[in-house]
Amino acid sequence: LTYCKNGFWIPPVGICQPITETRIIDSCKPLNFPSNGKVYYIYNNYTKDYQVGTTAVLVCNKGFRLEGEATLICDENGWTPHDGFGNCVSADDNFRNFHKYS
Picture: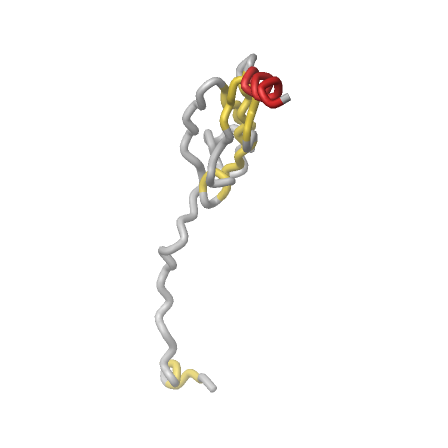
C-alpha cells in the first residue's frame, strides 16, 4: 500500500526518467538511388520530405527486372523493411539461364 504523508509518498516511489533506448524519428533519410533503377516517393503530406508515412517505390529501368523488395515505408524506426530495396538485374539474365538449362 502506498500513501501520501506530509507531501511525501510512503514508501518512496522511483523517479521517472526518459527512455533513451528506443530511437523514435519523425522522418527518414533520403534513399540512395539504386543501380539501374529509380526511386519514386509517395508523400504522406507536403509538410516535410521523407516524413513518417512516406512510401518509397523502386522502379527498374527498361531491360531490368526487380529481385526483392519494391516498396519501403518510413516509420518511427526508419525505412522498413530494414534490409532495403531489392536489386534491378538484367532481364536478359533470366532468359540466358532458362536456355542454358533447357
